[in-house]
Image 1 (cartoon, rainbow, N blue to C red):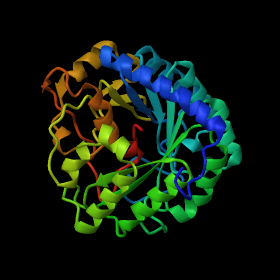
Image 2 (image 1 turned 180 degrees about the vertical axis):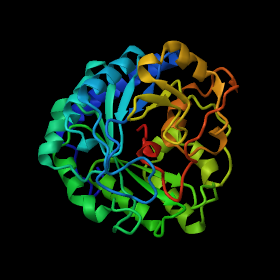
Image 3 (image 1 turned 135 degrees about the vertical axis):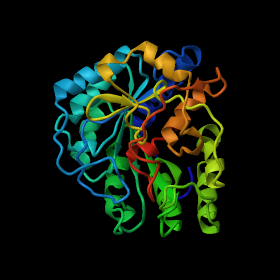
Image 4 (image 1 turned 45 degrees about the vertical axis):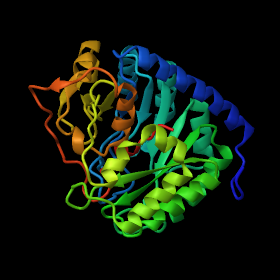
Length: 353
């Protein structure tokens, strides 16, 4: 154990060992069988208790999706054979039946994850998440001190991190960011070192500039990015090679499996390629079939070269060596472009660890 790092509780070590076995089995199955989603993100709550200026995935008034409807959607993902189901938002901890949603995901046999801003975490909530069966939790921390753009700061959230280190039995990942719109790139290194010291995993994302364009990282940004990568080299070597091109402001040549291996299910229950390509396929989840999954597996996505959405890259990596794709005669209708200064919402930040 490195000096200053908190030892991991034995209960968490045992549970994470079991989780690692489940993850390896799910990846092994995905390597053999391509006709099922590997990961789905599902939104039970569009409302959020924050209003980060870069985010286009929230409002301040929506009601939660009724729990009976969430049960039906989760069961539909289970019928498709989805391996990992991640709850995002909005802010999912605002949903009054979050524990039941997590338990329903586990009932399908899927790995249960959640992306949260962390504001509503305390000991009682963490212990409820343990009991419900949560496997993964991610918090994105944008800065050390809150600013006019984001209140997701280390100063505000550090006590929540201490509670997670003490009481959580699930895997915790802390994500930081560098790139356009970040005034203090050094903050990402501070956030990452704090996360690792508490026994969590840490990832870093690269984001667009204020015009939504990919640009090479500047000298200070690249220095921080390389230092954080050095702290977590093993995870990045396996799943984040695409970030090299993004750091250089260059397009990636890859086969995006969105709509197939990765599904984004909005609060209205529609399946989309991802959080930033809402509108296509636009099919109700209840009507989405294995045939849709297989079609989109082979459909080339025109938005892929300049995509920075980590979760889609990482999931697609499972099949990077497989069949070539063909152009879709009905290209997706982008509801919004990729990025607007900072990550456009929590779906951008999921990491496989």
